[in-house]
Length: 234
Image (cartoon, rainbow, N blue to C red):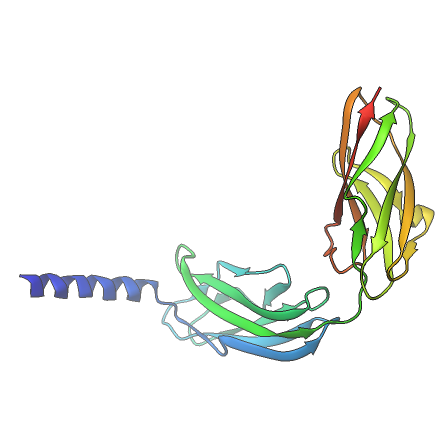
């Protein structure tokens, strides 16, 4: 009885595996970029071939990091045909060792998975690193519905100059500084500067705002470096 049950369970597992097995043949599932210099992105093209008897539709491709992107020459692959998958790894501001994955989803419900690994090492180049001293800036007493001049101390802790291009209010969705209007702010290596701008509280009470400072600093990957303004509006 136990032997019969074992045979049945093995058959069920085999059927489940067969139902979920992908008909795609991937030319490379482990890609090494080796040592590469930070800056330009690196690319690799691989081939996806349909070895089954029915068309394969690629429902989705998911990368494990925003540093990786992919594009397909076609998403529906007929039996015996192939599609090219272009893999792009962005090295800029992503120094050091990397081991990322790209998951390809196929099947009737898009649940079959094929995984590709990419790995390598990005040699770091000199770059600015932004900081705020202190991270939470006390702006003191402010007047409601008036422009109040406040200041932040921004420093460059990196090994190359950095450029500030924009300071944005996260809470009030307004611009505190924009290089397109006022010119870029350059901060030399190891230096601090005071940046002044105007804030306008719209109600009395505690004033609190998260500011996003956009720059070419290593620790800003396009989403801004966060700082906090705190004070009281009357």
